[in-house]
Amino acid sequence: MSAPPTPEARTRPSAGVAGTATRPDATGARHGGHGTDPRSPAPASRRPDAPATDALRRCRALVRPALVEAVGRLHPWTAEMAAYALGWTGTDGTPDPGGSEGKGVRQALAVLAAEAVGGDAADGVPGAVAVELVHTFSLLHDDIMDADALRRRRPAVWKTYGTGPAVLAGDALLAQAVTGLAEARSDHAAAAVRRLCGTLNALVSGQAEDLRFEHRPWYGPGAVTPERYRSMAAHKTGALLGCALALGAVLGGAPGPTVTALDHAGRQLGLAFQAVDDVLGIWGDPETTGKPVHADLRRGKKTYPVLAALADGGPAARELGALLSSSRRIDDATAAHLAALVEEAGGRTAAHEEAHRCLDAARATLRAATPSHPAAQELDALCADLLDRAW
Image (cartoon, rainbow, N blue to C red; front, side):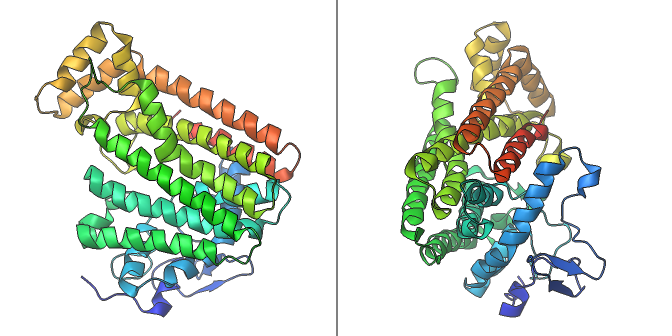
């Protein structure tokens, strides 16, 4: 394992390409000698969803310096692992052009929510940093619990550094998320910390339920129903998206009812997000997901499409339940057959409808809570872009 990066190295994670000098501009974006960051989204002119793309790019540029500073506060070794997990660097601490930072949806929600309730974009930055750190912490721990060897087409942190170090890095990110938010220069910092702590409890509850589902039968007494799965997803996935919007609203000075409405919208958005993620877990392109095709079926993971298919009760559902309950090894052919049965029993269509239903509810709530600010339009565009991940 290479030596931990120096403090100077840890402040260079967004370099354009390895070995190219970079400099931050007034927005916090960084420019390399080649003129572009290879991990930046494609220019707006190349994509039809320009409002969502532009909003993500703008928010990431605003949040990046504070996020870099937060990671730089960690112990050098945990900072190295955090930078790797965030897609900024390789294991040697130098910029990794092949790393993926993700879209930055959660941090964008916090910034846009602050603007949408009448605050400044900068007001939402501490909340954006906190939710990004918590999200990364959850991914590190989830990969260990789920034995996922890949994350965004690279070896997961636990596969690269070991299980113990990955747990430690996740703990460090969680501690820094709470500390950084508590130290925010805002009259609303205490309320924001209380909101984040409530979310952390929800995340743990959701993950506990998800793990317990693994030991529940596929059908019959004690089986996981689509409704129980939805409740789990509302905690595990929806809570953090709701928190992102709520933190932005709290830090932007919004009244309580508006904060509550945005939190609810984010939870509905999280349910839609999870439904899309579940579809990608079965039918997603490995080039997009970074995981093998039929990955969730191979692991016997209980996801919404599978549970909805089993609830159908028809011949395909019965065969699906029998195969999943057997001790038969799930090879390539079996996984493909299981995917076909899920689709035949209506699981994929049900997940599609679930995503649309929850997304429509989220957008309606957002429009009612923030009816006129331009940032509200960006939030709406960002939500609408969600389904493009799978359909």
